[in-house]
Every structure is written in C-alpha cells, then in structure tokens.
Image 1: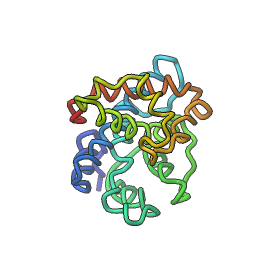
Image 2: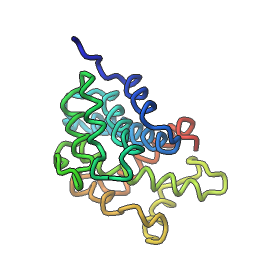
Image 3: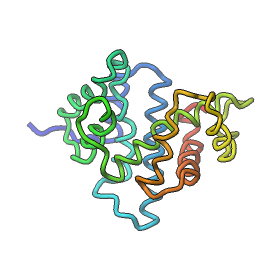
Image 4: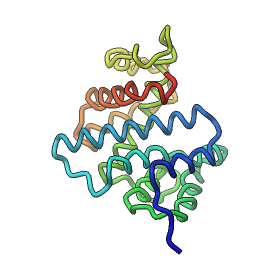
Length: 199
C-alpha cells in the first residue's frame, strides 16, 4: 500500500489532530515560518542546504513539537510519538532526522548535524522569546518588536528566564551567523506571519 506523501496540508492536519492548545500550535507555526525564511536566506547566499524544498523546511518546523501536548509530563518521550505518526507517511529522511535531533538531549536519538537541524535547534527558543517580548508591548503586536528591543531583553536574565540564551547564540558557531543577524531574520519571518500567529 502506498503511503500518503507528507504535505504542508497533511502536516497541519497531523498537528491539529494531536495538539489542541492554540498557543502551542502558534509556536509550531512560528518555527515553521522561521525555518521557511532561513531556507530563502541560505539559498540567496548560495549555501548548500540539501534536497528538501522550502515547504518541507516549514513542515519540519510545524511538526517539531507535534507531540508536546501528549509528552510534556514525560519530556524524555518528546518526538518519539511524532516519529511513530510519521511512519504512516512518505517522509524524506532529512525531516525524520531533524525531528530525531530536536530533543536529542533527552532521547539520545541523533545529535544535530545538518544545517536544517541546527537552524531548528537555534530558532526554537528564539521564537518563544520574541513572542514573550511582543506580549509585554502596549499593543501586544509583533510589529512593535524591534531587533534592538530583543537584544536589550536578551541581556536581562530575569526576563523570560526559562529561555536558554546559549541555545540561540550557538548559531554563530554552528551556522556561521551572528546572533543579531539570526534574530533579525527570525523576527522578520514572524512579523510577516503576524496574522497566523495572532500577534
């Protein structure tokens, strides 16, 4: 029996089937849009990013936390459920490997290696940080967030202190991108998707 090819539409259906919390869904949308933006960013710079399409980069972001609502009580199982669900679809190995690498600190499935895996690793915490800043703005809008406001809050350890700053700033070592530039690209991607993110 032929498996269904994983598309953006079927990825969203899979996410919505297993995740009811709208804020968690928006986090997945945000990471998808940021990965999509970095696909273009790398392409423009002539960087080899493998065989996946722009849509497949976005799919990876959408699904990276797809099982979190079910596994948050036992984070060591995070990504394992998603990997089971993906067996029902025809999915490129690069997407499977990136999902495997996402929670590697707890699952030990696979260390991040590829440019997609490291981009996900670095932007995951950042998207939440940017949302946290938007929510303390008077209008609670992403359009009010600036690169300068992010960098200022970044230094304030008490602000969104659960966010691992080092996970974000390793973009310089792992991807050769200065944190300011990585943040700029991520912020713009989220601002361009503000309607989808409800901010």
